[in-house]
Amino acid sequence: MSSGKRLKIAIYNRSSKPFSLQVYLENILNNIRCPNIEWEYVTSGKDVTSDIDMVWDPGLGMSRVPKVLQVTKKPTVVTVHGLKAFSVPMSMWAESTKEKIHLLWKKYMIRYDWARFKKKVKAVLTPSYYGKREIVRGLRVSEKKVHVVPHGVDKSTFNKNIDESRQSDRHEYFLHVSSYQPVKNIRRMVEGYQKSEVDTQLKVIGPNFPEDCFNVDGVDWVTKECSHEDLVSWYNGCKAFVFPSIRETFGMPVAEAMSCGAPIITSDGTGCKEVAKDAAILVNPYSVESIAAAFKEVEESSTIRNELAKKSMDRSKALRWSKSAKQHISLFKQTANIRQ
Image 1 (cartoon, rainbow, N blue to C red):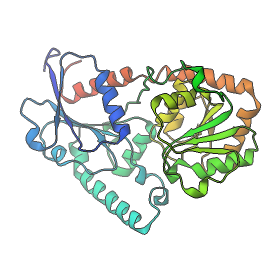
Image 2 (image 1 turned 45 degrees about the horizontal axis):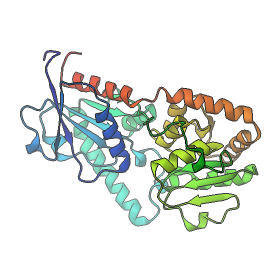
Image 3 (image 1 turned 90 degrees about the vertical axis):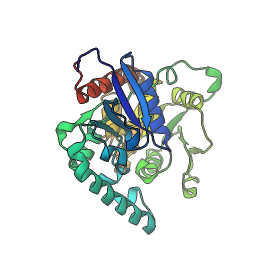
Image 4 (image 1 turned 60 degrees about the horizontal axis):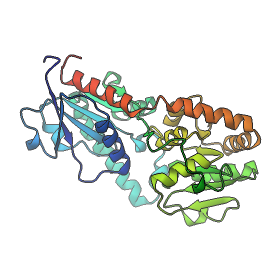
């Protein structure tokens, strides 16, 4: 194919998309600046017409390979955002016996699909080397097929510009944002906070927290739905953003908080480390003592807080959706055999 030929990509369209997948897909498509690329959404093999150059599934992970990807003869690319049940103990994702049985069945069927699909798929995209290791180990996909393409952060939304009137208790709280799952490590984070004996309040924002978490001195639980504007305000106003998750393929809240200039405390050994690099205090997520020490270090030193805040801003400049979109297009063109 010549370099001037248009590239027509069929995007597999799921009937239901998690919010994180919507954010990813919208930012990639909105940041592609290439007049010779066309998109078409498909839901079945019949939708993949002869003029399609390749098929892309932007939301594969802990789900079975769609039939359209299995049957099409067109080159295929998939984005795998993570394989959570393949890398941490099942108790982190399933608490009841019924949930564990369902998860075991799901893992078996995903591996069954990939036993054949891994030979057919041309490229697998994932946002971190942590995610790449999950894919290679969990699905036994060739390392050469798995490409690390980090996400970006929407700086038009998440930035240092803030209406001070929205945040009266500026720098008077530590902040955590997530939807409750055991893997988010909320309990150890709270234990570490208590053990540190810092005076600053810990503000935990997100839904679905167990009721037995609530009665902890110094911890403010915010379970109402928050807008992006609310989150930006919280990120801008915190003494530090605390995210000691046990497993993250990327850690978008860390990227958002960094873009707002927040000092970061996050986990060593997960995708969060790749996002933050040296712009964070890295903790052992399994160690209450490690988490407590990080709280205390940030609480006691304004110099450390200022240094971390500057590093956050500097590091966040590299997390651009435009850069991620450019890497996507390069891989799409390679897959479709279009010269760069």
